[in-house]
Structures are given as structure tokens and as C-alpha cells.
Length: 420
Ligand code: SUG
Image (cartoon, rainbow, N blue to C red; front, side):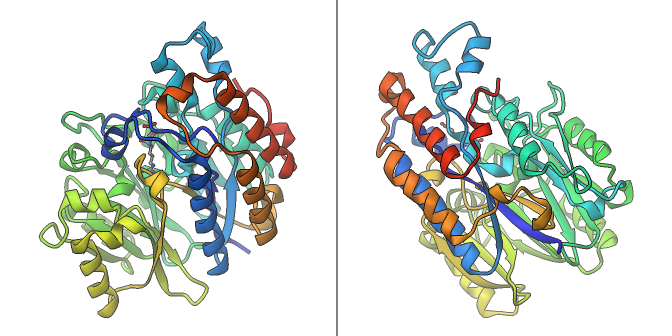
């Protein structure tokens, strides 16, 4: 049975606030703050558990091995000898944001009838540029069935690709054919445009997408400059619903017209800047919500607590739900630890439309498995990390041992190796 499965990145034991992401306002603002990795992982697990209870299919990805000694070795150094900046880049737990793991095209969109996944190269940010090797190994393991999946290596640099965070899919039902929308940036004023059109076009070709059902849309430079470093900070789609901020796209009229022509059933829910400013949309992560179809067929939004705390945002949402809008339910989660690095509910998950029976079952969640992960987190994850702690050999050892314990608990010991 083809369904949408949300694979959440388990927050890794080295989760910290080193302020590494230029253009990500939360990351810059929280530079130097003491992180709480254990709490962060528990917040993520609570969201997974709640989505499972809502009747949604849930999977997970392992955190990566940190410090990434292989990457440091390739740079001619070690965790001990590296500069503080390189060391912080080698310690980031940024693979938790699984929306950046890759771009997924379900089988019904692809010429060969298989689900295609291209691992994201994440070349723009040094701390994320070394994620893809381990992500690729994990995708190849989870989606190993060659009849159902085709996993591609990264698009070669210099073309930046940040995966599903800049990709939306519109369709009448997940299992049917969809219209895939690739959103790319050209300039973001002081901030980098992380998704390049050349990379998106390469992925569309590699996945064998029908050009008639593929759309390339330019992200508004204003949105990038305001802190929308990925399009999923200002827009999200699910089945026939596109939920977007008025200022998300460079030419919204042309995009909406193209989408209406390709999918006449589309429902576009646009939030005007007069109701919610771009600044409020970005601090609250209104659009970095999971827009999901519940088993009842109704559409729901899984939001971070910050959305409820931002009056303009919450007023808009309550009015929408009270009216006849397509979003019928609001679920709010405390994801403060991830949010403080610019990662909301939608960043934490990669959507894969596929038959769960074709996925390696070790990556699929159930209540017992989530309880087992929670036990490992409670026992092994550090309680707090200050930026100075990133130089501590004891912390490196704890992070490696914690991840190894998780691999063992999930019967995924083959992932417990240096992927570089
Ligand atoms: O790439 N933050 C991530 C957040 C990614 C959010 N993902 C999506 N929007 N889909 C990033 O900017 C912060 C790391 C630090 O500062 O240590 C960070 O990498």
C-alpha cells in the first residue's frame, strides 16, 4: 500500500549552538547558547510518537557520527589539532534536519516506475557539506529494494542542492501522479541562495520526471534576505493544498497560474503580508509546519510552539480553522531546541511516498521502537553542551559511544563506522 511516510532525523548527541548557518537567523541569534541534546532528542521523539498516534506512517534516520574524523582527516587534521571553527563544523548535529537529506520523487512521477531519491550535496555550508556520505549510506540501506527505489549520489558541485526543503509536490492523492515544484534561489542580498536551478534541473532529469508535470520557481530574494534560507520556511504543500506566504516566490502570479493549469484541483492558501509579516512568518515557522492528510482525509498542520506564541500567526490560524479553509486541525509541539537552530517540524522530516513493506523495517517506527530510542537517549545523550565543550575529548567519546549504543539498540550496527 503506497502511503506517505515521514522519516524524522533523530537529534544527535552533539546538538549545539555554534552559529554556523549564515542567513539562518535563529542559528546566528543563538550562537553561544548552551544546548540540551537530551531534551532536543526527546522533543523530536515526542513529535514522532504523536504523529504515529495520529495514524501517520513514521520512520526515522540515525544521527551521524560526530566528530566527523574522516572529514577532518581529509582536511589534514584531527579533532585535537583542528581550529575551533573546523572543529565546530565537524561536530554539528545538522543531519537531524532530514528535509535536507535528499529530494524524493515518488514512483508515480518517475519514468521507470520507481521512487527516486537524490542525496543533497549541501555544498553551501561547510558544516553540512560533509553530511551526504553518511546520508547516502543510510538511504541506500533504508531504500535498498532495487525494484521499488533508486538512490542517486549527490549532484556535483558547485551546484548547490539542499534536498526536499526546496521541493514541493502537489497531487490529488499521494499515490497518484504529482506535479513537482522545484524552488531555487538566485540571490538573497546579504545571504546565500542555497538551492541552485542547475541542481534542481539535474534532479528532475535524473528522476525521469515528466517536463509537463515539473515546475521550476524562483524564490523571492526578499524572502531569502529576510531569513528564509530554505523555501520550506515560507511555503509547504500537501496533496492538493499549497500553503504559502504572499512573499515566498519571485513571481507568484505566474507560479499560481502554472500550477492551476497543471493541477486544476489545487487549493492555494496564501497568507497575506498584511496579516502575517515575513518577519513573523520566519520567527514563528508558521510554514515550516508538517501539512499532513490524516486517516480521516482531513488536512492538519503540525506546528512548533512558536507559532502559537506569535499573535498575528495564531490569530490567522484560528480564523482559518474557524472558517472553511482546507486546514482543519492544528497540533502544536515543543521543538524549542531544534527551533533555536532554525529547524522546525518540517525540517526534521523527509517525506517518502512508498509502500512501507518495501522499506528496511529497521527504519520504521512503532511505539516499542520509539521507547527503545528514548531509553538510549536518556542514558547516553549529554544533558548540556556549551560551545567551549566542543573541544572536550570526553564529549567526543560520549558522542561516539551514544551513537554506537543507538545503532546497537536498532540493530543497525553496519551504520556504526566512519563513512568518509
Ligand atoms: O541548514 N541549521 C540548519 C537548519 C535546517 C532547517 N531545514 C529546513 N529548513 N528544511 C541549516 O541552516 C544550524 C547549525 C548551527 O548553527 O550550528 C543549522 O545548520
